[in-house]
Structures are given as C-alpha cells and as structure tokens.
Amino acid sequence: MERIKCAVVGVGIFGEIHVATYKTYEKSELVKICDINEKRAKEISERYNVEYTTDYMEIAQDKEIQAVSVATPDFLHKEIVVEMLRNGKNVLVEKPMATKVEEAEEMVKEARIQNKILMTDFHNRFNPYFIQLKESFDKGDVGNISFIYARLSDRIDVPLRWFTWSGKSGPHWFLFPHIVDLSCWFANSLPKKIFGIGKKGVLSSYGVDTYDSVTAILDFGGFYATIETSWIIPETWPSIVDFYFKLEGSKGRLIVDFNEFITKISSDVKKELSFPFVIGNTPVYNKPFGFASLPIQHFVDCVFENKKPIISPEDGLNNVKIIEKIVESVEKGKILEFE
Ligand SMILES: NC(=O)c1ccc[n+]([C@@H]2O[C@H](COP(=O)([O-])OP(=O)(O)OC[C@H]3O[C@@H](n4cnc5c(N)ncnc54)[C@H](O)[C@@H]3O)[C@@H](O)[C@H]2O)c1
Image 1 (cartoon, rainbow, N blue to C red):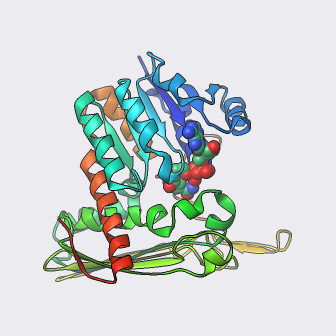
Image 2 (tube, rainbow, N blue to C red):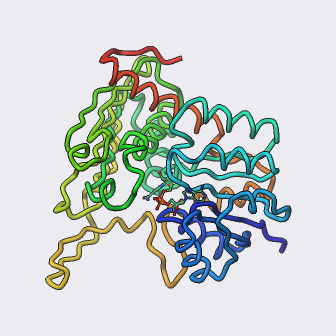
C-alpha cells in the first residue's frame, strides 16, 4: 500500500504525539521532522529514527511530502501553515488555529486557493466520552439544550514550567479552544452574543503576563453556554487538568466529569499523589494509544481518500473569532454582539 508521506514542524510536548502517530499508523510514513531547537530535533530524530531539519522551508520545499502537522507554539502557526499550503501540502494545525483572527483568515484563504486540507486539531471531537454524549444528544435522548456548562483548567506548572511562551498565550488561547469547540459542536451553531470576564495577578507575579482565569457566557439565542478556564490550579492538585462538561436539556442531562478519577497513584518514593489522565495519550508497548492520536489518523485518512475532515477550516477560524471576542469583552467589560 502506498502510504501518505508526512512531516511534523514543532516537535515539543504535543508534536511528539504527531510524530509517534505518523510513525506507527499503517497509512502514513514519517519522512522528516523539524524543530528550531536543534537539540530537541536531534533527540526526536534519534528516538523515532527519522531525518531532521531546523528549517521548516526544507519541509515546505520537499516535493514528496504530502501532509504536515504544525505543532509550534500557539502564536507561531500562521507563517508555517501558509507556507506549507502554498507548497501544496495538506495541513493539520494544533489548536488554537491562531491567536489572531486575521492570521486564521489568511490560513483559511490559502487552503481554499490551494484546494488543500486545513484541519485544526480539536481532539475532543475524537474523545470517546464526548462521542457517546453527542450520539445520545443527536438521538434526542435529552431534548433541547437549556444550557451548557464546561470547565477546562490546568495546574500552574503548565504555564510556569512547561512553556517559555505562556505569556504569549494564556488559558483562554491554550484551553478555551476545546470547550468553545465542544459548545459549538453540541449547539450546532455559533453564539449571537458574548460576555467575558477575566482575572490577572498570580501568573503576572511570576513574570508571565497573561490571564490567570477567564469565564465567558456564549449566548446562542434560546440557550447559552458558560465556559471557564484557569491556569492557576495549585501544584498539589493530583491531576494536571480539571475538566468537566455538562449539558442540561429539556428532557435530560449529559455529563462528563474527568474529576471522577479512575487511575490513582500514591507514591511515598515520589512524595506524590497523582491521578493521571490516561485516555488522552498513554503509549501502549510503544504504540500511541488514546484519543489524541485519532484526529491525526483521521487527517491521514482524509488525505489518503481525498475526503473532507470532520473539522472544517471554518470551525478552526470561528473558534479563533469567538476567543478573540471573549478577550475583547473582558477588556471592554461589555456584552458584545457576535457576527
Ligand atoms: N501540551 C499539550 O498538552 C497540548 C495539547 C494539545 C495541543 N497543544 C498545542 O500544540 C502546540 C504545541 O504545544 P506544545 O505543548 O508541544 O509546545 P512546546 O513548547 O512543547 O513545543 C513547541 C515546539 O515548537 C518549536 N518551534 C518553535 N518555533 C519553531 C519554528 N519556527 N520552526 C520549528 N519549530 C519551532 C519549539 O522549539 C518547540 O520544540 C500548541 O499550539 C499547543 O496549544 C498542546
């Protein structure tokens, strides 16, 4: 079987999941990886036995590469994505598609001009817990939406220790993409009005100039979603994420509560109690396992079969528009109309 020739630009924490997936999926062949940090590029190159470069143009200009994942920091997607599209590649970009609406618009425009796939990696659409709820919702099990409440937050070590670029992102850009996408997916529409409120102080006291937390109400007209995100969960919390989703319907309710931990490790050696989030990405005997790999495989399938991904370029763009509008509302202290 001819396999799709793939590459990954940005092979940090999440890019490695793309690398491992392309390396092991039967329909893809990992041809090259790229990272501006040569030490990291070399490390991944050796771990996965794949050629590396520190210049993404080498990937753009490599005629045999058909599909590229872009997993650079949140604010560094646009130039690389547009360059890949211009050179005829299909692109899977990490969420958020961009941190500016005009950048996301440029990416979507280029994908249309080149007639190539541009998919944003909203991996919760592949999370079996949400798939189960959506199926139930679509069958009418809980009637119409009255309201949605969703929370996705991270422990403070994520902004303080995982990234050097946290101040150029924030919980709103790093985490809201997921619950904004889930809200719109269940609502099957876009909000009509948006209100946001946010708080700064803790992260800025560590020199990371971004919001500690943001809460927003998305008014879909007839029903609404309240979404909240924080990047300051204390380090003593046993899980890296705090993830909860609830849809109250006219005839029932749907809930996913990832705080009902199944896996618990209490270690006197590490002096730590941890509740690992297993279903996202837990390699099993060196093969990727978990829903984080599924959208990457779906992307390969779409290139392979020349079909449209379940996540459209506009889904990625609208997500950026909504988050930008939330930030505008936080700054203006006003309810804002959404187009
Ligand atoms: N970490 C997570 O849990 C997670 C989950 C889902 C999605 N994401 C998304 O994935 C993207 C990457 O996040 P991450 O956690 O892997 O960050 P990271 O900082 O671990 O990795 C980013 C990598 O991109 C490299 N890079 C920066 N500029 C580059 C350039 N011009 N060319 C090539 N490489 C470049 C960096 O050197 C770094 O290795 C972000 O958009 C993030 O929101 C992360």
